[in-house]
Length: 213
Image 1 (cartoon, rainbow, N blue to C red):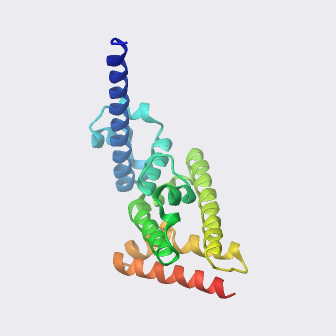
Image 2 (image 1 turned 180 degrees about the vertical axis):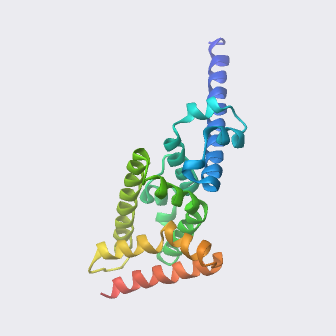
Image 3 (image 1 turned 120 degrees about the vertical axis):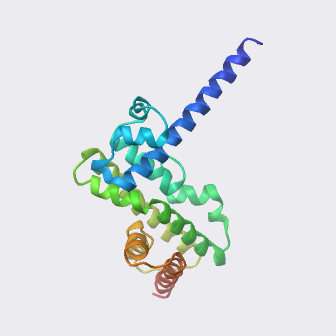
């Protein structure tokens, strides 16, 4: 028994070190992709940013895989993007009362858009020329569609009564998208406060209007 404990400890230590190295690589990949775009980003550049060898970066995944994983990490805070429903449940947002549920949800999504909008633009652009990225992008968009359908279902359970749930989900998806953040904050120069106030206003209007129809 005494001989097994050191081996278990060393195994856990190696796993933790490997996880920390992967995190550094993905954070570095996010920085390089956002700064250079997909085509100009290179494995050596990511390695330099992460402070690891190029071989370590290549072992972490292909260029396409690193882009997708780094976007998921930036957007959700964890690699292997959870669905919105899973995130709401895991963070306790789903249990909030009606008066704080929607503002808290909108604030969480605004934070995600602020973190991930740059990589989202890279992801969309890369999907035009890279089949692997295009496939991942298709899955992400499909998950987004499901997430906002679930959100409308949750809001309906909380008292909204949309006559066209699919249209309400589409409006919310557009309003709360990273594309919207990119256009309003980055391109149009809105402040974060103005952007957040706008999406809360628009989201409330969508939910309110659907509730009255």
